[in-house]
Length: 274
Picture 1 (cartoon, rainbow, N blue to C red):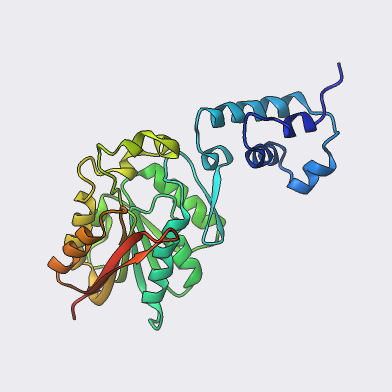
Picture 2 (picture 1 turned 135 degrees about the vertical axis):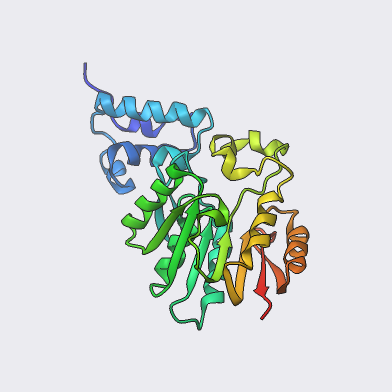
């Protein structure tokens, strides 16, 4: 029996056309132009089986980033697995702000707390090759993903394992601390919706009201920031005022928030008073 042509899968109506193409590019290891030029080629059974397996997983709601094994962030391709959060465009404002904070500083020291895939730390390290970047995570599996990404992208990042500042070796001081910590309240219904259902729960929620880890980061920052150093954190859409209050109470100056692509106050930060 002659195998059906590739176009039979290209016409799969169960998924959006873009997702069909991306899955086929993945299983075939070929670009879009190749798919279009070879749509009448006979489809190997193992290719059809690999595509069908991924299509079923996608139909069950599994994120495309986990199916493909990568996601773009700040113009770089990062490996992602279910051990780490999927990098999102809204987080790019944190990297952009970090780079602004580092402007004019020679060989700055940067700490990324809860690095996950390493997207934030690695993006900073790639943009500032002179920076000394340290990235921590409590998850050894997440750090393995971050290490693979640092290797792939030839980024110089020191990875340390542990919970927040417990991971940081004694005597370290930083010009900038950044973090995208768990900030979703444990009873938020969004945890059971969409892509979030498949992401590591511990990277999404602090198990309480959503401000616990943000508060820990703020309260511990003064022991690791150089005077005049900055702290910037990502937070939830409705947490900006609460985070600004935490920063002000901890003695930070020039406290303010910045908006993401959707116009939502997505990150807040300030400088340690000199």
